[in-house]
Image (cartoon, rainbow, N blue to C red; front, side, top):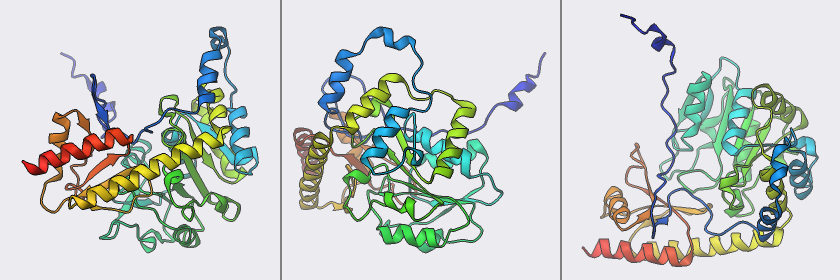
Length: 357
């Protein structure tokens, strides 16, 4: 009988676990940080006018039209912009391109849980550093001449907290011999003093990442962006072309351009979400919740009297899906995506019902 020795060569990895994707009618989905509103009407126009025969042609190999639109909006050269199939692919490409030494890369212990997955998959040495008791990231913990790289989400997930530009500059000043990645997935919902995109002009070892999934309501299109010096973007393009030559499809490129060119709609939806966020935050506090100061499109909350898991399970039974993390330090917290005002009102009413029981 074969001992199936080939099984010894299979990968052994703990995968990233995304938020639950519920199915059915009358579901309120507040567990994946998706945007509560549709994309720009200009995106709809592209979809309505798209010709099926266009599908038979390969897309722009380097997503040139979308890179041009993004560069123009941000006052940059196209050589400073990299586009790929969602920010996860952007980050994975950056990990492949920049973290190739024997020195460990460093990231906070409470952050986006895909970072350790990529490290394990790509065999990148790594170490975590604890966030502070208030869940803010300690800049000094990221210092180190022995660092092989630094990556942090700002604003951070799942905590919702943002760090200042001074924080980012502090980290950069103490990591001049390695690449620093500032993952700005949620920055469009944050105060103006948090965005550090312009620092790529000052620090040639900085990569800043963005996504179309959150603020631009295009999670289904899978579009992510990296900004950096022309040299660093060149390395990312080389990596992309080495294993996945055409990662962005034609429809994503064209709808992405339409979204970037509709600044008025973009800003209007951001204002709606931030207004709802602040309103719900106040209501949650009135119910006795501790609510961290969110700089994102979600809230991170805990209650001194009611277990987070019990609230999560109760809401789930009622068809309202939020996120619970069974992890050290945050296992009594809930992450709640900001939905429409109506969706949030229904959630609040169900939380009141739970508490009254």
